[in-house]
Length: 183
Image (cartoon, rainbow, N blue to C red; front, side):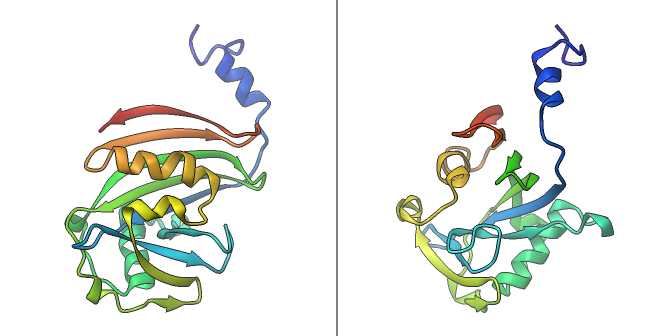
């Protein structure tokens, strides 16, 4: 049965999905020469008191692209000036009804070459505190559960590749489906 058929499982599922605002964002996985990841200990929502890679909301009302947003957030949060050739899209995450407040479309980027850790000039700012974390210690940090169970493992599995995942937070525990995978 085609997904456009109103009796299909997809159409039925979307018919019961909550109507919430959509947010577009980026997360950027920057690695240094020691293969450590730059992580933000968050002070502000979403996910205060938790850790995440640097990133932020896309200014879609200005026509900002995901790549432009990633480069802007890298500059604002880490004080680094990178170019399009320095980052690559490595994943897309669709989160339905995250925390019952918003739907999210998150574009995940990774650095294509190691970052000189000494060049990160802003380790503290209003969003929180940055820290270089060994890759094998990231899973020990206080991470949002969607990051812990879905994003972080897939970013590692698909490093240098690409994946897309749909996360459904309307059910508890949340459910997810990898819809595209090229490790």
